[in-house]
Length: 355
Image (cartoon, rainbow, N blue to C red):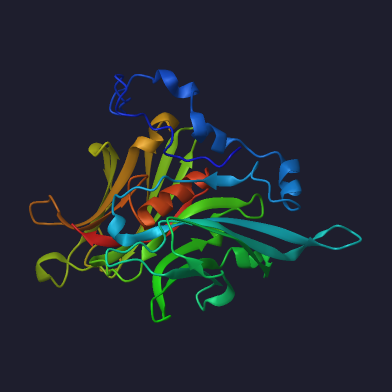
């Protein structure tokens, strides 16, 4: 399977046929023609995985790519293509796998890196680190800033298999200004427990978040997403929220969460959680299940809104997050990781933007 661009097969507006709408109950004719999504769903042949430990062939990668878009461009500073691969260490005589191995991190290329309204940096580099204490993994060579930057660099880290469940990898982009100072500009974090690296390598385009643009966040929400292609089921778990800021300067409120499924910006399905009393750090742990044919998956997005219960029962919106192929930053990163690790739940914290 070649690296695929998830958005490539979206219908263009020039076709006269109407897009299928989930609001309609009739079966969709084109479901057997699933295109790239079907390719991603196929289980890998185990022999191919073993061979991948020897050669970085792209034939059996768990992969998802994304087309750059300008939606929410304010919060992203380019994209970075990476591949992660875990190579278990074998005992030389028994060929039995130990609990240790090597995590190989390959940085392939960057797009639109560190583009800024106030002018571009003369140079840039990427620093890779592991874990919350940012254990140093490696730094790329300095690149002249360009529309496309080819890094073609690999770093390897000895790791226990157990560590894969605990750590995140952080990719930090730094610009070098005219006075040769290093300016932190973009960040992308990858949670290793979400990636199934013991089964197959992972390849993705990561969106770098602009660290210098403070988002007017009114709290954070932890969401888990998974898509089951065989059942055509999208599951959204609303886990918990923290540091909620109430509207109109209130000191207390009763929060709940609304999850909307959007197609071309139209709300086609809505579900909501129970209400928690007087809690700025509510724990919900509620699953929302939506029936979504693979064919229309790339035309959908999710809008998750935290609201306060009001006396009239309607609710006042506190803040929201958009997740999907048209979103930006964490919103598109979470969606892409869900598609790259089908069947497996992927959890991420999202800042809540003031509605």
